[in-house]
Length: 398
Ligand code: SF4
Image (cartoon, rainbow, N blue to C red; front, side, top):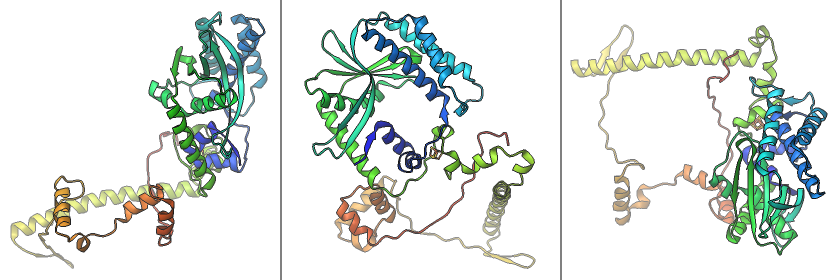
């Protein structure tokens, strides 16, 4: 059985295609986001701080910052991606430095707890049979004088999570399972996130019940990841940082045409087709508006003149005013009452039919027992439908 990590699970949830390319197809690319690069250097610097403290040496801030500068220079490479066009390498370097300074000033002289380990590797099972294995790295495990263990995580993101996010966080919850497998006598554990850019610490803890729920939920997710055959791309704000844009059907075309000079770009067949389609759709919607106005005018004319057929030059228009019996729709309040009247009269089967949309939702969302789903699926078939949605590009540059 493969070993999973929290980042694999998150990647699958965020974009199944990216997960497949990275972990199933094992396509490894050098491209690295500058935010991730900076985060790694800050983590390494804080690791050095606590590793040295364990050896009784408290580094000065100057020593730490020059270490940060050194590893930044040593690791920098040409494939580091800076997505935010108004920021440069210098800005990110300075941001990492600021985070280290803030952390240092807040926690110096670093004697409020004892460090048990930094970048501590965990490898543990979620079940007794050891079929569901997880791995991970704890940024720092510490113990206070009161004997409370703290699983600490450094966050270098520009987003400060809420307390609710912390209380529901999967990663440190899983690490708690790993720590308690390693040392079953550890009972008091706090989960601590250091939001370095905000000088904020978030703390949470997990009850036994929430840990067993977390295990169940994670096992279900792993089962899904192991059995699915379809890994669709899922577009999100994270796509700009994705290293697989040239392999992804959502981004491949952008990637291909982005580097073309304007004259070639405008001749590229895909660009030509989309431009033509957009132009025609615009004309069609103008014509639809005009048709609607003329239609309304014909109806007014027919009502006013009390005629049903109106003669044109080489066509005639027949106008029908039809009165239809209507009942409340699903979302209207009286609908429930109406359903009850029919049900109580024992006539439901005469007027109802299977709701195919609700059925598809139940099957695709695995809302029923597997046995029933398999039985129902014998009657299903896959049909391809197609649609084209036009939307405006955020970047109007081209
Ligand atoms: S570009 Fe976006 S949709 Fe495509 S694989 Fe990457 S994250 Fe997924």
